[in-house]
Image (cartoon, rainbow, N blue to C red; front, side):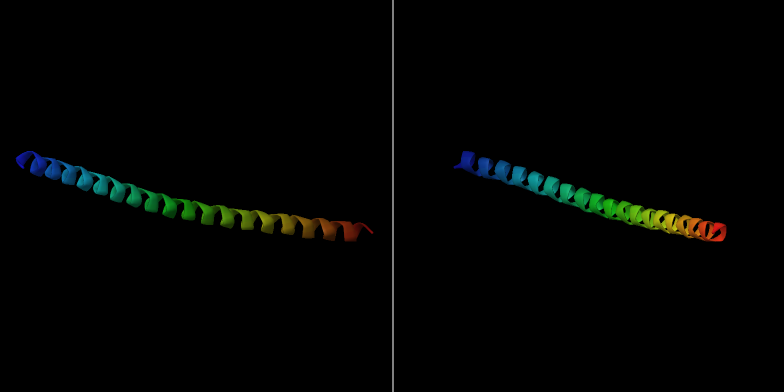
Length: 69
């Protein structure tokens, strides 16, 4: 009877440890998701800036070509 009780207590401790590890992993994944979202937003902003610059250069070239004609 005592052996079964000790086995249950040890098993319960292992389940608690596993639960703590899963919670820790979940928190780390959540933090990583937030960091990836921020990185994605930065890339979107930089890509939009790059597209704006390309449009600006295209407009300048169009004006220079129009002046030459």
